[in-house]
Image (cartoon, rainbow, N blue to C red):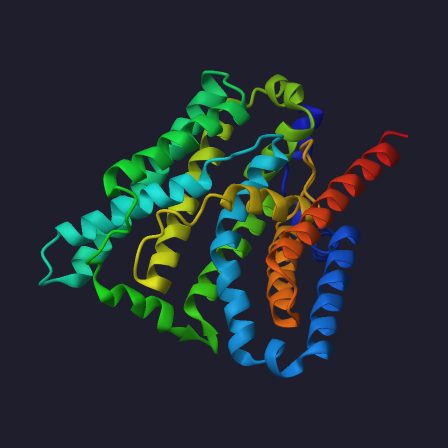
Length: 338
């Protein structure tokens, strides 16, 4: 068996101590401390506003959609790739799903909503498959391929809607947003389940091992007889599906589409993944870090709003955090090389 084949076996990863070491890396430990310090600091400044149940729930809800997208983005960045299209794919899929819901007979809203969600997920899968084909088979650089599909998807959304949100969506769809499980909003529970499933797939399966291998040594993957093209196609297709899924969660929360509301989703997801410790150079990353990387900017934005810091300062601070995360990644790489 090849050395790569040895690294792709999954027996050892089920050993409890190995699982613990993989789940709580040193970088994730420091990220948890940073997040805890932010929460304690904002709570100490304004416990009534920041620490209220309503505010904590809003932070979690605001982060949920981005978390779903960031799960797929983690896999992509670990392979050394990038995807600029999830925000546009989210909007396009959301519009298709909403139009199907409106077009269906309204005497059976359950059927209309189910058909709309299915259409949205299929649309997201199609965009993701297109990205995967362009990158893995046509060998178009990921930056260019996803930049192109971003423009196509966003332009198509505006053409279909004339820049206006789709009206007439069945109001029953918001029942998902008002439901809760064990005291947590159902949307938050769903997003966390997606992250947990993604983390298990990344750390405990052969698929996850190949994902890391592609980002660290793609030539070894090829020599081991594995198809990196099919793997990349699957990963980008998954991004399309999860972007569409995030759009449906948002539509359930607000009861409408958001044609002009997701222009920065891709950049936010990339920032969350990098802040969470995933290397832009590929081969390194974790879903635990991504989860924390999603919530650090969410807590910062919410806390800054409560303490009265302007929106411009919020963006500046979050940008500085992103630069610091990339610089830290480069320092770690230099140490590893030495």
